[in-house]
Every structure is written in structure tokens, then in C-alpha cells.
Image (cartoon, rainbow, N blue to C red; front, top):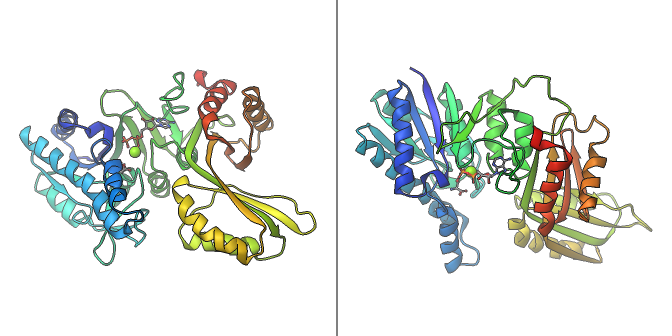
Amino acid sequence: MALVVQKYGGSSVADGEKIMNVARRIARTAQDGNRVVTVVSAMGDTTDELLELAYNVSDSPSSRELDVLLSTGEIVSSTLLAMALKSLGESAISLTGAQAGIRTDNSYSRARIMNIDPKRIVNELDKGNIVIVAGFQGINEDMDTTTLGRGGSDTTAVALAVSLKADKCEIYTDVQGVYTADPRIVSQAVKLDEIGYEEMLEMSTYGAKVMHPRAVELGQIYGVPILVASSFMDKPGTLIHGGISMEGRNKVTGIAHDLNVAKITILGVPDRPGIAAAIFERLAGAAISVDTIVQNASTENITDLTFTIAKSDLGPAMEIVKPLAAEIGARDFVSDSGVGKVSIIGTGIQNTPGFAARMFTALSRESINIMLISTSEIRITCIIKEDKVKDAIRALHKAFELEQA
Ligand code: ADP
Ligand code: ASP
Ligand code: MG
């Protein structure tokens, strides 16, 4: 008997009717002779609504309480799904992250899974139950609830597939798979039949929210192929795996974009050793990830330092930068939350001349100004004005002829 882990996202369980649809799909998988573990996200926009409730009563809600609050969204959907399955005559049981044995570190709102004790899940499977696990959550060593970061139910699913040595890991969502760009923005975007872990990791890290980056990373480390497919249609989907053929290398696979970006510039920074370390150590200490960093060539030993962070981290980052700028003798600092990122991703980008030129030309034809550029072996990212991001994605999709993918 094969063991299948399936994950259903928020829009797939947004109301009672959709939960019944998902229950019928799971029941079919079980009736085909599989042992099934299902991971669910919170219904529809529940997580956003819970966040709003928290910010209605506090400007800076306690991170511990916030994680417990947000975890309830997934508990609601998991219990309803178990009830729906029972109404179809299946044996099913819901488990919270803690009951499922998911242990994390202590970083509230962005916890990482440390290990999983799958005893209870295996026990329930042995009893003939379909097991429904509430996604996006675990417990830390103090038995406090933690959450894995927005979109983290994907990571719950892949981590469970690893821990249970599942035969299949399937992520069901509201699109038919991974596309050359967000199909909600580019109507000509093409669904990919397969994509390698590296490219998918870069796509999701740079904004393609169809997969949580940590889930892709776990898939890659443990060699678990991940199928992304529609929860509404029986269509083939996209397989994320490591055995991509050499054919089709050295080309752009997809365009990713991210609107959760802010830019901070510290002006008139004395150019001496230790200054950058002081800034970025302080930000790292507050668990703020810094992305693109640009330091201008210094004149008379004075330089400007610009970096990007998640827009949602701008408040805490400015709290750090304000006193720090004074400490290091910087002239001033400014922030801009009206920026976004657009990236081209594909194997061999850095080794193939012409990709960068083609990207910059496509953007300039749309009169889009590039503020910052960062690259990796398989990616080029431009920071541009937020309100130009959609035009940029469409222009790049055309320039790299991705509608013919
Ligand atoms: P779920 O609730 O199922 O986890 P998400 O909203 O997190 O779903 O992710 C699916 C969404 O990701 C799609 O509706 C789509 O708008 C967006 N998306 C962004 N980039 C891509 C891409 N390259 N391919 C497919 N979907 C993408
Ligand atoms: N419900 C959480 C979120 O909205 C986790 C998830 O959907 O994966 O981010
Ligand atoms: Mg998601």
C-alpha cells in the first residue's frame, strides 16, 4: 500500500462546498488503496482576518499569542475536513501540529521544523484512519505553538512526506501547477510539466508564492519529488524534482515577482572596516533578512549603503537603523516602501551572455527605471517601482518568448 501526503491550500477549502470537494478527492485516493495523510491550510483568507483581529487590539501583538491565534485557522479547516470525510463514510481523524509530533525552534512567526515524531500519525494510519494534519504549525521545546511563516503549510506537507518516507507528496492548489509567471498577471503564462529544485527554490524565494521556499528546500535536501496540481481539475500538474534533463538548459524558465519589498538607504556612511558588519549583524539579530545590498564607490571616504528587506519588516528595521545611523556617524537615512522585485530565473543565466542586456532592454522599452540589480548563478533581479511590476513581468515574459515554453 502506497503512502500519499496531499496538501490542500486555503482557496481549495474556502467554504463548505469546497471542503466536500476536497473530501471526495481524498476519499477517492484512499479507495484506490492508499494510506493518506492530508495537510490543510486555513479556509480562504482566514489567516489575514485573524491578523487583522490582532492588530485591532494591539499595535505590536505578542508574538507568542499571535502564533497561537494564527494556528487556529488550520485547526478549523482540519476538523471540518475530518467531519466531511466521515460524512462520506471514511474513517478520518484531525491532528494539530503538536499532536502530529511537529517540533520547531523558538522563532515565532517564522519557525523552522527541527524534527517530527510521526508515532501518532503512524498509529492512526495503522487503525485505518485518513489523517488530517493542521498545516503551518508546530510546538517548540516549551510546548508553545509556533507557526512556520506565511504559506508554511507546503512545508508541513513536504516535511511529513520526508518523515513518513511517503511514496508521493502532492500539493493541490487553485492553479494547475507552476507557470512561467503568475498566471493571474500574465494570461499567456504557460504551465510547466516539470521544474528542477534549484530553479523552483529561486522562483519561490523571489516571490512565486505557489510554493513555500522552505518546502522546496526540504524536497531538494531529501530528494522528495513534489507534484503541484489543481484541487479543482484532474490535470497533470508540475513535477518539481532533481532529474531534469540537460535539454532546455541555458534558458529562462520563469519570471518571479515580489511586492513585499522595502528599500532602506543610509547616506553619508564613513567608509571604514566594520561598518557594514555592525549594520547587518544588528538586523540579523532581530531576525530581519536583508536581500539586495549595494554600496556606492566612496568619495572622500564617505559612501551610501542601500539594501532591501521585506516590507513587513520595515517598522522593526527602522527602529534599528535610527539609533545605528547616529552611532556610526552617518549623515541621514531614508526608506521607500513603494518598490517591488522582478526576477528572471533559469539554469545557466550567469554563463550565457545577453540575458542581462535583454532584460534591461525590455524594461527600458517600458520606461521602467531600475533602482538596484542583484544576481545569482540562475537569476537576475531588478528592484523597480512597485506600480511598474506588473508591466515589467508582462514585458519580460514576452522578451524571453516564454509564451512558447
Ligand atoms: P494555496 O492557498 O493553495 O497555498 P497560494 O495562493 O499560496 O495557494 O499559491 C497559489 C498562487 O500562487 C496562485 O493562485 C498564483 O496566483 C500564485 N503564483 C505566483 N507565481 C506563480 C507561478 N509561477 N505559477 C503558479 N502560480 C503562481
Ligand atoms: N494559512 C497560512 C497562510 O495563509 C499558511 C498557508 O496557507 O500555507 O499563510
Ligand atoms: Mg500557499
